[in-house]
Amino acid sequence: AQKVTQAQTEISVVEKEDVTLDCVYETRDTTYYLFWYKQPPSGELVFLIRRNSFDEQNEISGRYSWNFQKSTSSFNFTITASQVVDSAVYFCALSEARSQGNLIFGKGTKLSVKP
Amino acid sequence: DSGVTQTPKHLITATGQRVTLRCSPRSGDLSVYWYQQSLDQGLQFLIHYYNGEERAKGNILERFSAQQFPDLHSELNLSSLELGDSALYFCASSSSWDREQYFGPGTRLTVT
Image (cartoon, rainbow over all chains, first blue to last red; front, side, top):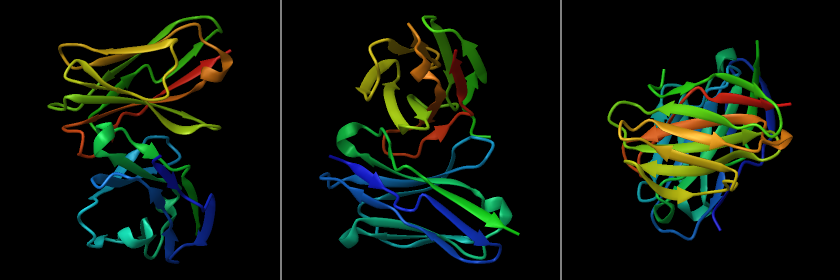
């Protein structure tokens, strides 16, 4: 069965520190997609990135970077030089071709960035 | 702003009642998904509609139903409400099943 594990429930860092949020997934499908979403205190879910199972290239977007490794079934998210505005709950999610796109979410990691 | 709208933002109702949550997808998106977020269950997929047809069901209770109308807006109907149905209900839309989903602001349902 498909599953997404975010082992870190809460992380607290001081502003300007780098932080990595871990995500491990399980699937038997060969075609699947991985996502990260951010949920700030206001409650909305904000899309950050989508990755398909055939593209293992790492991606960088400003202070955000993602490391996708099929060999370890991981899709980790790093924030460089964290800022207070990065404080939020971050969710990793998986969708499989067989399920037509419905997202399986991890439990989320609550990131607190202190000034 | 994701472009997905949901109404109402908050809903307070009593046990045994029925409510309807409404969602309008982003312009051009044919797929609508409903999710429930609660403290104990986390974010769970409920149901997926594509261009008016039901495509997939997740952990949706029999007391819950949904539909997607010709103008592509969707409604989630929750009946015989119980205290445990209190949660944040999200609607999301996408252009295709393999694309990212954009979420609405959610409807916070409180059952008293």
